[in-house]
Amino acid sequence: MAVLVLGGAGYIGSHMVKRLIEDEREVVVVDNLVTGHRQAVHPDAKFYEVDVRDKAALNQVFDQENIEAVVHFAAFSIVPESVANPLKYFDNNTSGMITLLEVMKAHDVKQIVFSSTAATYGNPVNIPIKETDPQQPINPYGESKLMMEKIMAWADQADGIKWVALRYFNVAGAAEDGTIGEDHAPETHLVPIILQAGLGQRDYIEMFGDDYNTPDGFNVRDYVHVLDLADAHILALDYLKEGGDSNQFNLGSATGFSVKEMVEAARKATGVDIPSKIGPRRPGDPDILVANSDKARRVLGWAPKYDNVEDIIKTAWQWHQSHPEGYTK
Ligand code: UDP
Image (cartoon, rainbow, N blue to C red; front, side):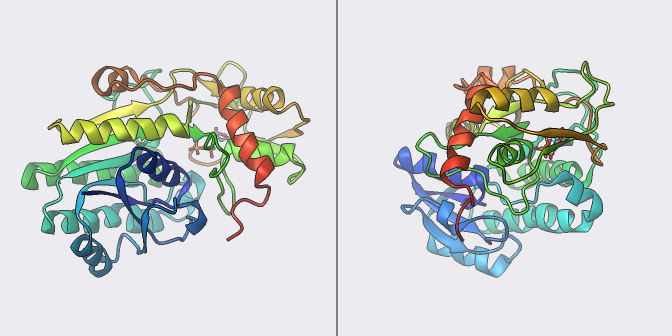
């Protein structure tokens, strides 16, 4: 029986695939390669270049493979892009989920682990954020993912499809062996952009807004290592396999770092000069997003290994130094 990883050629998905293969699990990857990289997919995984919205092609994959569970990473995830082009997000993310659930239902596949996001909370009412806090997204990306959670809940009620939504905070870092890492085109995420400035590929890192309601005025996020995230997905698959009910978990470190603190941590972690400038706010950004992840620790037994942002940045730095142009294809 195989685990199907949708979006397994993307940043987080490819680390998950590697981890599953290292656990000697059978892995099937579906990715449309719009943002993913074929080279990022572990050679021992079976690969299909298929779009999650292509129902006929997805049906074929489920016909051909013996799939027991799905891990769903295949979504667009850039907040400002979603503000500018919301329909793109509702089409690929939300509508893609409907197609996927229809195909799962038709093939009697009843378990799905889903990449959700802190962006479903919007401007949080409590810090750190708990899973039971209100979900009021302030951008279409967060809204598209909240809709996906709700759709799964109704599919569970009607069809018994059990789901775990893992609400990620900010993901960073790379594989310890340096083989895979983060490569987006264009790059929009903070840690890779800081490291590109450290490599001289950018003149500086622009810090978006210094007038947020935070201690130093820069907005605050909770950074988690991509390998700790992969661990949580393995635990969530095991939880569902053991008959666990549908559930949601925050995945973060419970420690917030401002953009400025991240730049300073990167200067320490890399030992290089990283020029920075202050720019205007970016649309759709809340002041602070920090997770309470006690529930994942308690229920799933999640025990993240990276509790220090400098160590997270060091693994990303190793990848950026060895792959200055990212994946070559
Ligand atoms: N950020 C920044 N400059 C950049 C990219 C990001 O100041 O060039 C900030 C952004 O405003 C946010 C944080 O870094 O507070 C993390 O942003 P990212 O895009 O990495 O992740 P997101 O929070 O959107 O998922």
